[in-house]
Image 1 (spheres, rainbow, N blue to C red):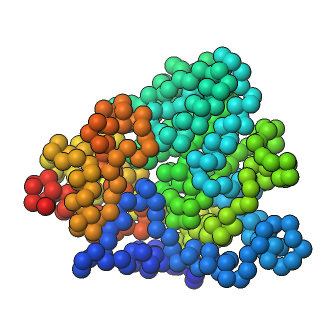
Image 2 (image 1 turned 120 degrees about the vertical axis):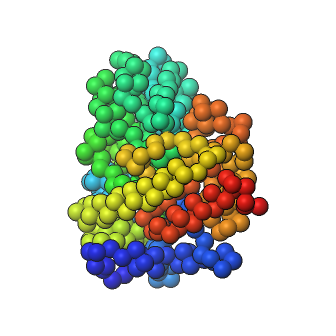
Image 3 (image 1 turned 60 degrees about the vertical axis):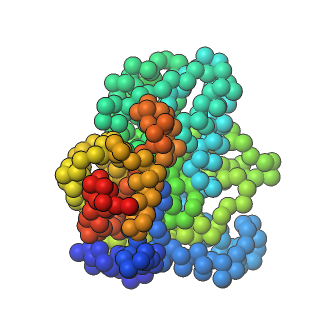
Length: 414
């Protein structure tokens, strides 16, 4: 992929995504289902295809394809380290965030004792709740839940109320996959560390919209999934090197005992890892940059600015409608362009169906944020409508979504 000029051209970006050409009737589809997974650029598709076409092999051989796979894995690990601002040997790959977190939780729980406490968040996706709850149950530990605020975010005061000298781990999200709220992570981590608790953060939703920085956060563990930021279906975990080396993972005897290898269960998806490398390179390309940390920071700044404009446009339009309730912040600060809505007359599933008739893709339901929906008393109403955008969306697409929502609210859409 050739480099793009610094003055980022949105149309040139969209040309990298074949899926964005899909037609629904006489209009292009609007992929406002992005919080559930983004589309991928042609460079990612090509990288995965090229890996298969050139000949694939497992690690450890003395022949070309095995050596090439090892070189690919090393390049991808280095690139993922640049993405998270972490050393390459602190990065482990796996099937997805859920699988990686389940494995990590079991290993960390080996260090817990009866009477110890862990804290999870009611704002989170269940993949950052249940793995820790199950591990705590097995070890006889107490689970405490950090509740969210009136604007569906987290606050350090609530965490401090729950912390004690028995707290061993705190788990929370960097950004809600439902309301788009960006949590005050640095404050929460400092509070947890004040009682010597470890911290695991879910960066799955966040990484599509902001650039994670494990050094600035001073976090112990971070997990994300590439398919949420224009990559393949693949999970990525960061762990402090000293922790990855001291914890005992669940693994088979023949597997490598050294981190990060010991955290990668079984044969890895090398095709997806090739796609991850291309995905991170794409993020550098966005602003004509390399995919080193500096280049990724440049692209992340552009993404944030562009998405704030999209968010403002959507929120302004929603303010002129009646019938909808927005969950989450109604300002663009500390939020991603992900919007959770309920309508006073229509179910979320019906809203998603009506939007789909107009070529607008959205999700409805609970989005695995079970505690969030329960506490909002929305489970019995079949959850929420979730509309979300990323950097490849246009202002015109925002307007299309708003126009159909307005018609639905006025009772014109059938």
